[in-house]
Amino acid sequence: MSDANVTRLGQINGAGAVDATFAKTYAGEVLTAFEASTVMADRHMTRSISQGKSAAFPATGLIDAYYHTPGKELVGQKVNQNEVLIHIDDLLVSDAYFANIDEAKNHYDMRSIVTTEQGRKLAQVMDKHILQVGVLAARAANVVSGLPGGSIIYQNESGMPASADFLSNGDHLAAALFAAAQKFDEKDVPEEERYAFVRPAQYYKLVQAEKTINRDFGGAGAYSDGKVYRVAGIEIVKTNNLPRAVVANDTVEAGTANRYAGDFSKTAMLVMQKQAVGTVKLLDLGLDAGYDPRRQAHFVISKYAVGHGILRPQASIEVSASTAP
Image (cartoon, rainbow, N blue to C red; front, side, top):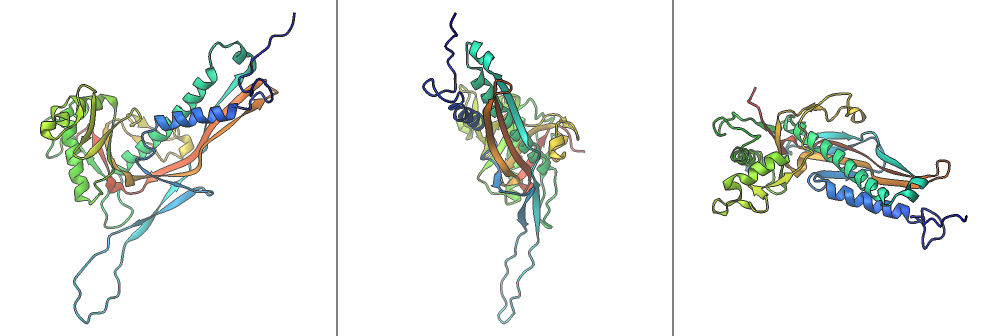
């Protein structure tokens, strides 16, 4: 009996190295899945560094303007300033091994499924951390003296509907968005690139709220499509990654030095302008792939080393499903 002619998935035209095309295919699958799964990539500030464990962002205050008295010497004004350090987390990895014998027996391409899931998982972790930082920014004071900090809108806040419910009432959520827009305006937060991040349950409550999609009220959305685009000039972003529970120290956040831990059990929505949160990338999304002859298997590793931090807390507002303390 002769040996079977096995088609090796990574060979070029049936010859040469058995993983010649593997790394390129793997990279494309992971990158595509990562880019498709993240909602925060272009909705906050990012910076890349080539070395080091942290990066500093300058934080400056406001400068005054006044009318000059003829003959009076101009000596300059004092401007408050500080810096914000963002630290790099531990290396985050997603790895898998594919045995040659299993791939030969399998009737479908399991490798592409797993690599796609790697990209999605890495994107999910990054999104979750950025959104956690966004909520923490809303609770933070400003590092620059004289500048406002973040804000929290509670259900019993002045101007909210009676017995407001931010978890199950779309009209009440819309009212919170208008209140958030007002707070941003009062803090001179830029009007462009404002976003509201909501879970699917709250998103579809907004869709069902008449004024958010009814064009007679200036709404932007489509009831038939189940979409709402903007409320009060704020883009609505649906995501499952908005934190919803207590993220305790030394649990899943161990590799982040607990910088993103907090109680998010009452967080109903995060309203954020792009400048609120920053990410520093030491190692951007990277890919390792190869063949391990000792184990007769291919291995694939997706990884990155990044860190996230608060830049401008005045550009972040938490909408809380609780009453003011």
